[in-house]
Image: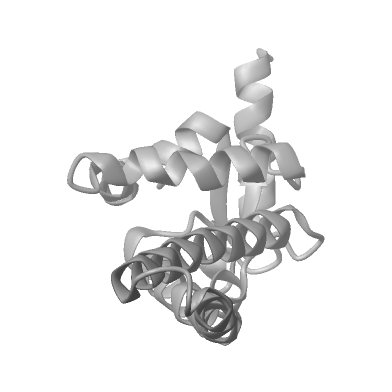
Amino acid sequence: MSSVGMEESAVANAAQGSDSATAGYGGFWRRAVAYVIDIVLTQIVAIMVVVPLSFSLGVVTANSVSPEQAELMGGGVGMIVGVLIQWIYFTVMEASGLQATIGKRALGMKVTGSDGQRIGFGKANGRYWGKIISALVFFVGFLMIAFTQRKQGLHDVMAGTLVLKR
């Protein structure tokens, strides 16, 4: 059996699980709902971090910069902190023993390598940053999920990952 055939067999076994009714790949709509859950959660955390941080920044710089500059700095800090929170959340959760974010877990999915095994931090990191490329041209990289056989987005193909139903 070729290595591709063995890989497909391993993924099929991983996707089967104990209940054949739940076997398979995480499809577009299930993944979209999971993503909304995750974004809501990360935005709540970001707001809890950014508001006091921006307030403190405003107090410290009140006499040294114009209100427009302070607003610009606060927006920049908010953007950077928001990206960092999402990056850490998605990367750590998908590389963890859970193999899923809270949203994916709630909808019965997990992230694996193309061999059906748990992914490490590096692959989860590549998957996260690949989502930017998936979004670049009218989100076509995400829309691929609805049309590919293994329900992979561009970021999944680039990182060599799958999203499987548990």
